[in-house]
Length: 293
Length: 293
Figure 1 (cartoon, rainbow over the protein chains, first blue to last red):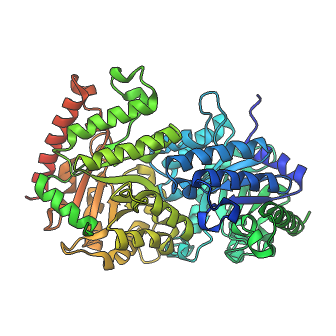
Figure 2: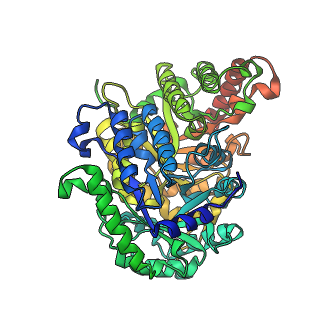
Figure 3: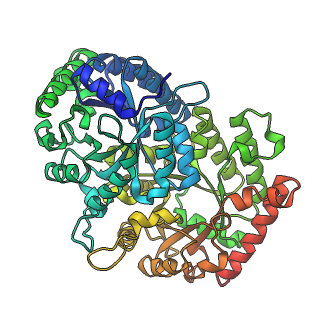
């Protein structure tokens, strides 16, 4: 198999589906449909998430399973995480493992192995991984290796969607910038050698859709990064808020919605898959329009 | 069972064993003793780590299994991580899960469940968890809940042992401080309500043993925090470098050594358990003396 870069695969998927939607898989037992009430939790997670994957596959370019919710079920949950990743890939979706890992050299190496490198004969668990930049360049290097050697991608946290992120990310530096802008410049530097044919780097950035003004500034600092924008829906962000994230390239920004899509049935009733498919289709169209296509 | 705080349990263990040594469990297949060469990797990790636990239990107050190395083996590795945690606890050791988790509210909640809260009838996986502070106060709140409700502890990354940490942690703020000092002040604030009878907070701080000068400054900023000091041995730090980490309380700082203890047999030969026990005993004594006891 020829090695294609993460961004090349992403560009193809965005063009083909005319969508920049990423559906976050955040399963919580208490919120699953009634039909899962008496199912063993790991199996309930697997069936529910695979149902969502089937429902959103025509409308989304990727799913973003949140590792924490699976880890909360113990080793069986971690097994289901891998099964859901495999199932999503087979359904033609890219997989962004949302695990926000970050550690020093040899440990970061192990996380790269765990998430974005081939496992023996098997495909990597995910196409891309979210990464925490607090430990600096050498902690990110093993992930960059995986991008070079295996066509993986990463998304570094820059400006997160939560209010508390300001405690650290908005602190003012000696040159007047908030810290997150310094981190954005680092991420741009880390990603420069990994800019693919489409002009997009395998090193992307997480920027909260809840901060429209910051999105425009982040784009200026990170001209080649794919933005992963969480915070739409349950967290209050709106697709129109993220227009500034898009460059001329349709794949330059991805909108991630989790609870508003996977629990869409709670608002409108009916089968959860039907409700999720409808909400995913609606959101994907709205974002496509916002992106200026 | 009466709920005792993490620091109360720690103070007891330190006094009883006259040790502030934490042994990091960082298993890497290629580095295990020959006797594990033909053993299935998860089983090799389990046997090796349990062997280390037996060897160091008289000399260390805690083990610090590094989640990444277990995650790299997939779900079976995660199962072994839990088994090793249980085994260590049964051997009378505290368990510090080194997973450096950090995410927004509901997701951080799931990580707290995964690592430091009771799992149904079972004990929590670990007594304490390392936490990344980049996402701010609301991302740490679920872990503080676990400290309040279940006697857990956390160690927040402040100044990490790796050189690259400077890329973010040493950036100069408008008031002239490096960022890590701002983070230290936040960690002090987060931990203030969780100071136990011994005067130590359940919210501790990770400060690299590789930065002696910074350790003294960190102690000034964090008078009640237990310091977890990695970087001794393979990373170049020396026990004498960390004297400034200790307050009047013997349990105010913990020295963490990983490769130099668990792979001690590679230097001196012989049975790996015997070599680890000897190195753990030697280090524990050296640190005890440095701590001024």
